[in-house]
Amino acid sequence: MLTYLLRRLVYVIPVALGVSLICFLLVHIAPGDPLVAVMPIDATAEQEAEMRAVYGFDKPLPVQFGIWLGNAVQGDLGQSIATGRAVAPEVTRAVGNTLLLAVAASVIGFPLGIFFGFMAGYLRDTVWDRIITATAIAGVSTPNYWLGMVLVIIFSITLPWLPSMGAGPGGSSDWSWDWQHMRHLVLPAITLAVVPMGIVMRTTRALVSDILDQDFVQALYAKGMTNSGVLRHVARNAAPTALSVIGLQLGYLLGGSILIETVFNWPGSGYLLSVAILQRDLPMLQGTILVLAMFFVTLNLLVDIAQSVIDPRISRA
Image 1: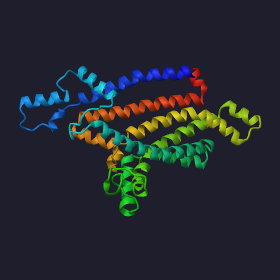
Image 2 (image 1 turned 180 degrees about the vertical axis):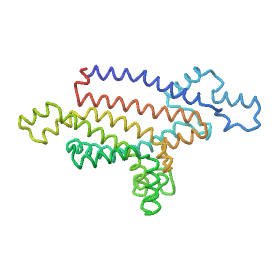
Image 3 (image 1 turned 90 degrees about the vertical axis):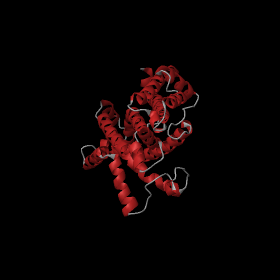
Image 4 (image 1 turned 135 degrees about the vertical axis):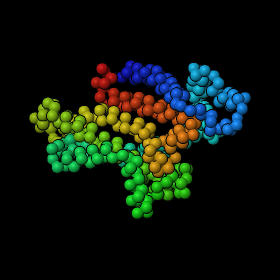
């Protein structure tokens, strides 16, 4: 097990470097000049050259990447072109809000997806199986931004029960653990949870249905084991694959919430990315994408470790 863990940790290093390089290059190959937003219309060539030197855009790309990566390792993600503020505090605050939203959506979506998926797999080919499967397909197929707008119309306008904007009263971006702030979390968390819940539900249903057809399950019944005992064996065999899917969906919740955060004006990393894209703010784009990518790499590592703990055959292989 220790050798497996060390090998996985070593694999993370080239992956992290590759992700950093891709994050850096993606924003540089996009068309347009990022300094247009901050330079005056009548800027002279000398002023433009001075501005490029200030942000380091006058150096070759390999040199820019080396400087940026060295600063990023030390926690310095640069300075925003649009606002002039340091990128790291802005990204930290936004990613914290996204993590809060992702955890809330996970608490809603993953337990429900596992429970109903397990039920559908165990009660396969029954009316409950059909209802749960149809619900899962509907959840996966529904555009989440459209669902968010529908929920706003119903629960914020028609029935003014829940707020629809910001993370706190008055559209505030500051979070606090009280009911007035938690009310703002309900609608975006439900909206964000629907697609992962449907995917986990369908995956769990397929896993349970497949495992119940295997020979060892029939052997367990033949030995006189009770249904609860058999279901424990089924759950343990389904856990590694289900955990892998949950890990991928949690990564989606962290990085794929840009539309949801825009609909609900939630001050997270997705909303920050959308603003940075519109303003062509390269340091903010690079910093946000890098932090989210590192979260995803770390999450995959934790899922690999958890899978090897649940199923020792993975580490032995």
